[in-house]
Image (cartoon, rainbow, N blue to C red; front, side, top):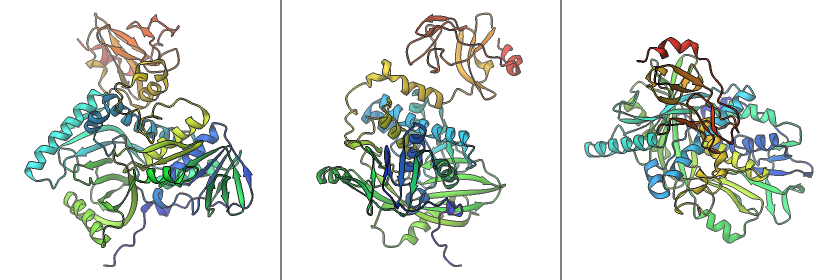
Length: 516
């Protein structure tokens, strides 16, 4: 049988074409690099009222974005327990929250532009490697148990399982991860970019100097530059600054195979505890089940026979699913930093970079677009110091703005994206409350001492954050600006002036009222 040529599965979808740059222009922002990071940045900046030029030296949506396996995950390469140990629990929580924000941003764009890109919310499983020996198995089982405990303590919807589906190994299950078809997604975003002060150029090699950005003999005059080139260009940094940045980055190659699976399996994402870790997604495509498995990472240029790397990934997949039939394979490159967190932010005056995404390119690429829009338009952003080049915020003790007024953007993002408890209404006991999801609607539910259930909107009537239940004081409280409400919704203390609004969940009322 002939060897499969390395061709990403996503390449079957054609992206729109754009002309090369043939004239000088004036814009507010020039974005260099038209992968997911650059394209999403252009969309968000255009919607914020900026004139944008998006410039790509090759074809849009190619190279690194085209070689992804398209996991959309808040779970990052660095373990949550390691992050909590080195950065503190607040920062560890914020790293995962950043992932939630990025996934929700993608979901929001999919809904707003009616994009058909197979976007699906799925669970993710961090599981013990199936080939671990007995000693390693016991150690890694405890590690994923500790991860699940910490994630739950930090208010993420995570739990420990003795055996995860499909891989049949102990795991931490994390809800509300996602996956999509990246080229279908980018195709519609690119079509939305056309016109209204936004220009896209491909086959146009941009160069940055003190005089600005040029493409051949043509100039792009813009006060802001966004470097979205995976490995950032020097730009306006001096040579020493650019060289120091490169010392913080390491380039790795990772391998992926796609295979048809017999039978039906639930869609999900998986990552194991092997070093380097291996990853997997299960897709339902027109009634058939496919797996995309990846791993065998190594520093680029340090392996002479890539066939062995493909073989390693395929062998691992077939240990899990012996009848898997490989249909495609490809490799891609990832940039890692020493702490496995991305570098996102300004590195020179009005020059924004985004790099070091490791195994979370789609998530951190989207987050970078959010952060680029915010810094350019002057909006507050809760992650601008956490992922900055100098990492100066880390190790300075408690993250004070989480309890001050400026934390509003953080909590507004977190509460909208993190999801509600899936516990049934009948489990809410007397004199207790919780924010739960009922038939797709998020509800602030309280049961009084007589057993009567009160269901309210969880949205604070001040500026729209989601309230939390205070178990000690038996009140609803807003984490953004401190508004407090009675269990039945009346205002106790502002700045909110209006009560929480009642919500009718009558379809669940019979079950709800049966709680003794």
